[in-house]
Length: 467
View 1: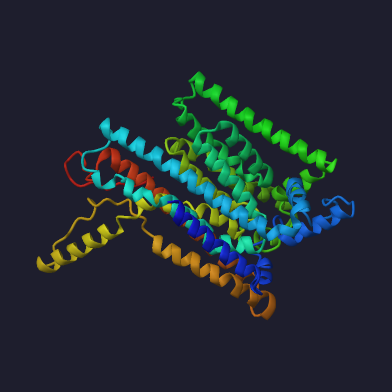
View 2: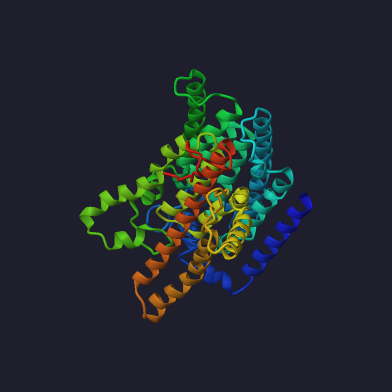
C-alpha cells in the first residue's frame, strides 16, 4: 500500500506546486470561501510585519492567529509554500495510518461479535470483508490530498491547513490508544480554534473502549480514567497558553483570538451562517443571538455521546462536520477534513444497486401481473437516500460562490442576499448529507442485531422508522 500512497502524495504535491507558480494563486488567496479573518495569509504577514517592528501583532484589529503560529512563520516565512505542502502531506499520512488501525479494530470487533452470535443470521451481506476495507485508508488520503477544497486552502496558505494537521494527529493518537498524545494534540487543536473542545467526548469514549472500561456513570474506573484524561488535556492546554504568554510577555492574544472567535465582530462574508444574520441584526439583540449561534456547536455533543457511545469514531466524524458548519468563521478547508472520512462509511451506500435491481424487478412483476403490488419494506433500507442529489448541490454551490460574489461585488447586479442564499444552500446540503449518513449508520446497526426482514407481532412486514 506504500507505493500507491507515494503516488498520491507526488500527484498532490505536483498540483500544489504548479498552482503556486500560476496566476491563480493570488485569485485563490483572495477568495472569502478559502480564507477567513482568522486564517488568511495576508493577515499573518501583517502580524509578522508588526512583530518585526517590535509592536504586538495583537495591538490592532487585523491579526487573530495564535502566538505559536506567528512565531512558527517568523522563522519559516521564506519556506511558507513548502511548510503548507508538508503540512497537507502529514495530515494525509496521519489519516491514512489512523484509518488503517481503525479498520483492524473494526474487523476484530466484527469477528468477535460473529463468534458470540450477536448478529442476526440473515445479515451476512452487511458484514464488511477485509477486501472491502483494504483500500479505505488510501481512499481517505486521496480524498484529503486531491480534494479541491484542500488544494485551494494550501495554495491560499490558509492556516486552516495547520489546524487540520493537528486534528489529524489527535485522531491518530486516539485510535492508537495513546491518552497522553491524544490529550496534547487535542489541547493544541483547542488552542488553535477553540471548537475542537467538542472532540473531547468521542476521544474519551474511544480510549475507554480501548482500555475495556465500561461506560457507566456508577463505575469508579470510568470516572478515574475520565479524570486522568481531562487532567492531561487541561494541563497541556495550560502549558501551551503559558508558553504563548512567555513568547509575547502579554495576554493580549486571548481577547484577540478567542474573544474574536466567540463575539464575531468581523462580518466579512464567508461560507458560514453568522455574517449575514448579524449584519442585519439590531445591536441590542446581538449578544443574545451570538450565544444562541455559538451554542449550536456544543449543544449536540451530549445527545450524540449518548446515542453513539459504542461508535466513537463515527461520533468524531459527525462532530467534525458540525464544527465545520456551525463555527463562526468556517472555510472550505474545514469541510475538506470531515469529507476525507466519507470513504470510511462507504459500506452505507453499497446497496444502492440492490435497491435499483429490486425496483426494476417489482416494475416487471407489476407489468406481468396487471399492477400487482410489490412490497419494498423488506429491503435493507440503510442506503444513503440522497447522496447523488446532495453531492450535486455541494458541487454546484462551490461553482456558484465566485459567480454570485462577482455579481454582487464587481458587477453590482446582485446583492448580499444572493451570496447568502447560496451559502445557506451549501450549509443545508452539508446538514442533509451528515443526517443521511447518520440515519443510514443507525439503520445498519439495527439490522445487524435484529435482521434484515422485520416483522410485527401479527407477522406482517414492518418498516423501521427513525424518531
